[in-house]
Image (cartoon, rainbow, N blue to C red):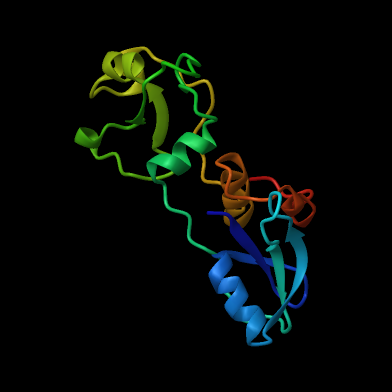
Length: 170
């Protein structure tokens, strides 16, 4: 199911919603359509981007949790130890600082690893295992831009969103 990008009255991306929620906001007069996604042959068009009529003053940005799908997307669906990716590669999550040593489930401590590298590292630190990360795991800077990129990559987003995130790094 495709998502709809919600923009506030000043043009700032706020969040995403379902097309049903978007239609509810449009039918009550709280927003207007900025971009339409044309349906396939004979299907109706759906909103891709809606803008609220008023600026949202005290809006808390969406919270981005370090879940499996988000970590895999951040790491490009590739092992951060050996770089393995693609079909046939069994990816897992690895705790850089093992949980047995007090490692937490945080953006900075979780990394995508192939099954072989995760087994090789085991419950040891990087120094003890002799393994090196190809890049350091970090928290995404912009939650809304990260989620837009994720939705587009899994087919739930719209190419028209790109102009609302121009110059924003995830």
